[in-house]
Image (cartoon, rainbow, N blue to C red):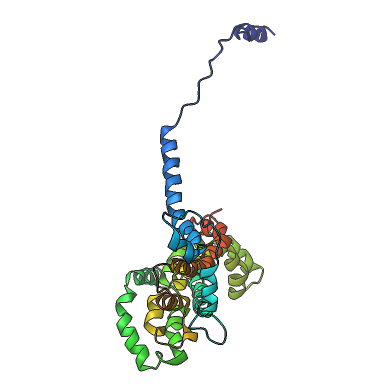
Length: 315
């Protein structure tokens, strides 16, 4: 009790304790500057999209009579979009070329992409979880393939495809599909660190339960790798969707029913945009082409960020 009293005596009473004056929270000038820069940068990125949307909704008549920049049309017009579907000179069987081009682009992009992702995951899984002779050497060789400029062999590839008849008729699609069906060195390099983060005890427990190699791969590895796969899917989808060079080489002179979206857009703008006041049509075409990419990213952004940071495999 004496110790307690001594302690109570040593502690100052509440009314005797010095009152600390509350300091105003300091203003973080650096943080304000960073936020300001980010806001300006965001507005700078969004400005082209806003301009495209406004321009696509403005009639040619309003453009002719405008004396200053049009921030928002007086009357919303769908003139550019209607021309896109009504006046299409490359329409085949009643299907507008932009719609047919979109369908062609989707299957030309998705079929090789899904096949390549699955094979790349399989190879990366073997590199990550299995020991076999020359494993590190083979992985380094795979990584080296990333630095080979495949575009430099474009002419050689075209001559080869031409000699085997892959540049005429519907076979012209094959050079854009067949090479992309196989595993990608860059995807393997990206996926292996992610798979390294998956505990080996999970695989061993599955083996003890009697699961075979393919069952483990499809039931355990593929679901756990979903964030990384979606990240690579977005990269591959954007690259395939915007593939203009390959389509220009193999499909520009093909039948309009074979065109991809990029070739259809080029031909439509070149043929129908004949006046300086056809900006609404040009912007309508551009906006229609951008919508699928925006939708894909918005649908997958959660897994995309997780896959990029390798977070899912290291928890």
